[in-house]
Length: 372
Image (cartoon, rainbow, N blue to C red; front, side):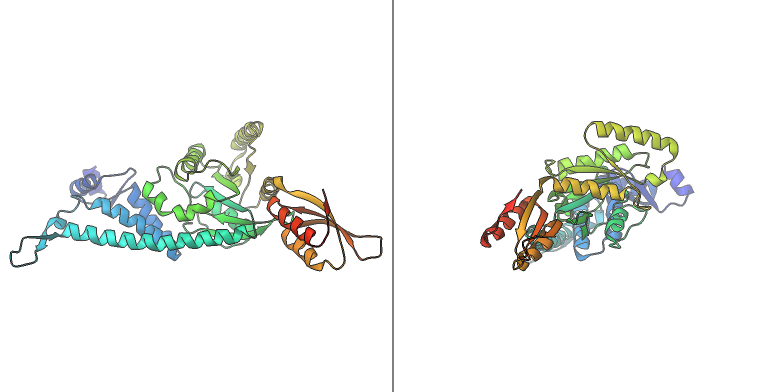
């Protein structure tokens, strides 16, 4: 390896594995080149992709946690001592101890700032819960097409490029489905195999939206040769690291079908039929061309609407405030003027389970009733 590196005049060697500080030091000494392991490379990419203040803090925290583990016999120049205090002199604080202390102080400061971010997110979630709009979180392996799908559905203009970890900062947008139901769509950071634990811990605030979601859309790059292995990696992260108990339904989105040839499409269709037989139908989509997105929205609509209640209400002409509330918080399926010349209307409305109780309370206050 050393001869090959010298022949190519290589300045940087990337090792697709985690290296201990001593291993990294020894390789750099023997190869006479900078060595970066898998975790270090992911951190470098994260550092270039972070856009918001929160994302930058999370990346810096992960970087510092990584650097702290490197301060153990990694660089010999850190072992020299500074002078002691007092007339006796004595051993002072070594450079490595100083660096550890500075790192520790900075880590605590960042954690404190991120706790404020977490509290703010909690307040935002509690505010949405009062509306409430169901949250649909998009997850998947990095570069599976999550942000392209997000943009296609919402017109958000989120950065979407053919590169890993293009999205580090969570983005949320409101989306109105064909039924009139409104949802909040959340784009999240991409997963990757053997994701370092420190990165998962650093991005926990970002991933909280996944834990609190009503529906999880697992976007897969079905054209990728390792798509099945990527699926297992994402499911592992969801199950182990996010502590989800599968309370929210997970829908698989088989994306990038525009990149699949006819022979591969036959195999995909056969696999999809097997999944349908097991009661978990995946949705075939192309976020680039828009193919399958209507089916996706209908499927999400059906899942969210499982607990909806349909009611018929006779609404007096004077109940304009309640009529406005119904249009804002429920779906008015039909409205017909009654034949009794009072100006009353008969409305058929569909309302979520959460809003059902609020509607009954408002009807009771006006002395009205509803028929199922």
